[in-house]
Image (cartoon, rainbow, N blue to C red):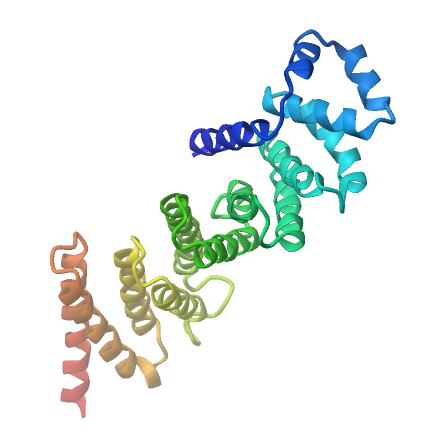
Length: 294
């Protein structure tokens, strides 16, 4: 994923570099040392610093380019180079894998130049920066939600973009991460079972597992974990029945039995089919005995 993003980055570098003639600065940078860069950095000639920054950017010296552009972006605001300067700053931050600042810079560009020359790429890289910064599923997914929103915004704004395919793939990956977060939560609720909360008196953890799984299946109807969510619902409903108070046991066994039949109908070839069939037998045994007692 990083490799593809960097290829796109290099294409944008060439696009920016082609907008000016920098032969003089190519020689300077190839032969420059820290002292040369410091001299440029301290210069009061902003145009000279900007040209140096552009050439550093074009040659992959992103650290030098970012240091100069951070100083220049305020001075360039409102000038003919202001738009390009802001976009290039975002690109250097992205290249340096400083995704938080890159996202903020691209967002600022999109706000300042919504119809600008680099607007399409800026919207994409804003979303991609958020995507690259998302944490693993077990952690808080607030950033992932923001990345989903930003990627969807890009697709809505540029439905014919040559980046559409990549954006759709990234969006699917982000949604899978959100689904996995819900699945981990549902697994945990099921594992906790009667711990912490009194399962015999209400089965709160099993109910939480059911609600979490049902919501995930509703929110992400085409996710690749549907069978596991359905299995967790079925198992939780059966455990609720098994550990229920007498007043609610009949109702819950019937609900669990219906859930088992639903699971078998939707996943007839599931490895868990045998479990569902055993649950049905146990549910029927209780409901039959209950009817005979009545």
